[in-house]
Image (cartoon, rainbow, N blue to C red; front, top):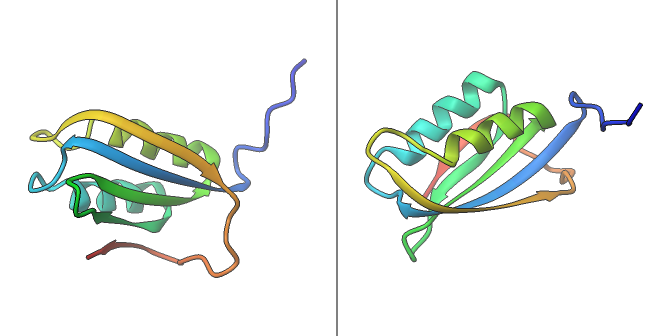
Length: 100
């Protein structure tokens, strides 16, 4: 039997999303999805046209957020998602917010 990490332990997933992801309600849709999943973190537009987000919570829920950003809201056209699991910082947010 293989051992899987505890899906309920707190994880942090950092993502960068490319494509038509600005001006299509991507940040707001991501915030709603994260809140529905009970995740903390943030999402923001980058000057180069990408969207960056950080999801903090149970790993399985972070994976569900990742599945969401791979498609995005209806008018988005996601062409690439880079994702990186990171160590959870000590001063992590308690809610999910839209930044800048």
